[in-house]
Length: 435
Ligand SMILES: O=P(O)(O)OC[C@@]1(O)O[C@H](CO)[C@@H](O)[C@@H]1O
Ligand SMILES: [Mn+2]
Image (cartoon, rainbow, N blue to C red):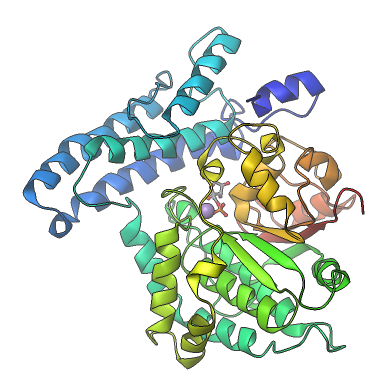
């Protein structure tokens, strides 16, 4: 698999974002945010004693808590990245890539010098390594308590979003511009602010229980009409939409409401959801989280509309599974040609539109390179064109493409941290390559 870094050198592309740029958000993340996340993980797992028997608890302490603290130390002192020592199905792929990178660089890869995307993914994979090595008698998601809390805080949003979804009945055929779909897309966008890896910094983002307008989010690009048209052109109730999920809590709740709105509104015949194969970037949704969220909605904790919503959204036809590609370090431009991604690329190619949720998916879609903000999105996504794309993302890293001239400057004048603080968002559509 060719790294984005290597691709950049060959094709004369922009540089990958990296902590080696010391005034960048990548640097701040590697220096400050990632160690905080690791400290919180250790602290949180310490408090979960009641979940484990005494043998498991001993292993939690020695393998997981001890390992997290060593990992944090490695990161903070910029020790070389180490090969993985577990024996999971993806261990060899990660280790082969590390070896390849070491050879290309002619030195040990470093937390502070290599592409941020790779380093950050590697850190989350190292946490999974600890869980694998601990080999507990029960499964453990290191971020479960935070995820649960985030779900429990979603009731107000769930009630409003479920109502909007249920009100979408046959709106695709009406000439009213699909108001519920429009509203739900905005909800899904503003709910992306609630990602737990950002709030680990305690730069609390107040999640609006209502919509993007009331959260004060600046929507830089709103291609809702193009998305609606793309589904409409496919013909009423034939379109298949794939949603590549991001975070649990308000975001997953609103994504489920979006799925229901697409189906009930007649915008799509099928919706398929993609989850992560393992806990990732703190708040990313796994298959277990998806089931737990539907259970919680069905329990009535978020009101009657949510119960109705959960009843009409059974998990099995809805879920497209958790392809292991999503939890690799690879950018989406490498999906089709990598042995790790070719199968997933084929699956996505069957969609009439692929909705990519969140900041990490956006970074991977544009290879996490420092594109000028006016670079055409088609150029930035490169070889990732399985189907028309809709990118739904609040900006939480220094990368964006497809803005009109002057837009970046105007946003910068308004908020100097516009690219990283979740103050701006995009609903960005890219038609099929041959359209
Ligand atoms: O993909 P998500 O959940 O919207 O965001 C993930 C995220 O918190 O992780 C990275 C930094 O750690 C950033 O790209 C982004 O802010
Ligand atoms: Mn996420």
